[in-house]
Length: 248
Image (cartoon, rainbow, N blue to C red; front, side, top):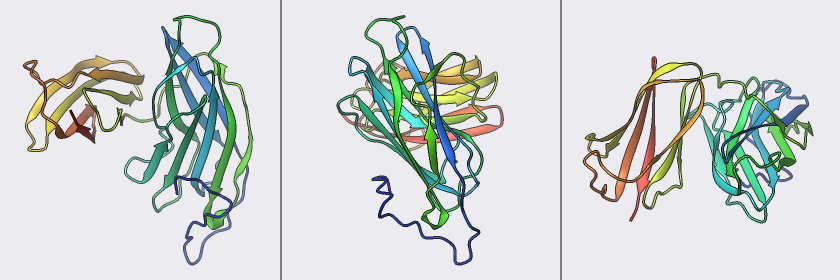
């Protein structure tokens, strides 16, 4: 599915499905904080029968790719996301529904890059290709705006733990999450036995995308053993958990 070979892939529709037709569009919203550039891929015009989408970003090789995560358009636990290893200034962001179709409009994916010099001119990132399929293998892809629009980015619609990069982690990992509004947040790390390893965040944070670096150490400063860990985000009434693998 993640190869996104739309010319040959056929999603298995229900026995009696409603016709799927429409034209979706993709656009890019860019923001920059210091030397970190955030690119949010936004999809509009979903006829409520979306099953998969693929967006290829082209960026200046002088930018350093940091991480990518699924946007809030794709329900956690009901979809699959993959960001292929960037090469030659290109990054492919694929997502697919696991079962039920995806409805509504929203953020397809969020990608972050590090600029060579903080505060340099406009971010050099653009959409190079957009593809989308719905039930019955219907082609939903319409046009896209190649160049990103810099400026303020709308707050996410839900609190959500997005995951960690790299995966598996070697000496530590960047942990990404989003908040729909100002909220008291608790972000904790547990080992496979359920014992708390470290509290990473405890306090009120503003709406938007957040990320922090776990240095691979326990609360007492000792290195954490290789193995499986679980990162748990508590924000308001939302509790979200993601698996994290640490290797040495």
